[in-house]
Length: 179
Ligand SMILES: [Zn+2]
Image 1 (tube, rainbow, N blue to C red):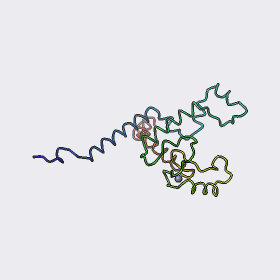
Image 2: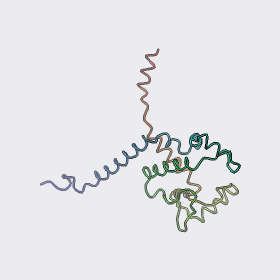
Image 3: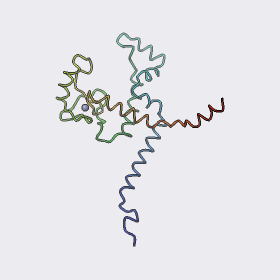
């Protein structure tokens, strides 16, 4: 008689593998749909280039800087970022409740370096004093002022990994024909 192992019952490694490949498929599908936006998540000039003539006219308002990007474009960017985080990070690596400018809730810690608010507040004061908007300790997606860059690099790398490989052998063959 076959044991549970042979029948594949309770065979957790294969269940895990299935969940894992489902996640990979979802990542691939999402990337294929939005590759350009995902590759430019942190390149704000890409998002600025999506402004219509009407947007540009709105930008000329005296209260707006040349850096201004309309909310409707930023919303799309935020949605792509949020979806990608969900597809690529573990739950413990980020906190979806911290989007935009929400303030740091008591007791919460940075999901990346584990620093508490007070600790980060002091560090911001010492290291970034007088540096405009970075003056306060803040969490974005659960990452403190000092970890945001690290996590953005991580996200950018995970997007780059999805890029299709260029087959150089085909290219060399073509180049050979031209000669
Ligand atoms: Zn941190």
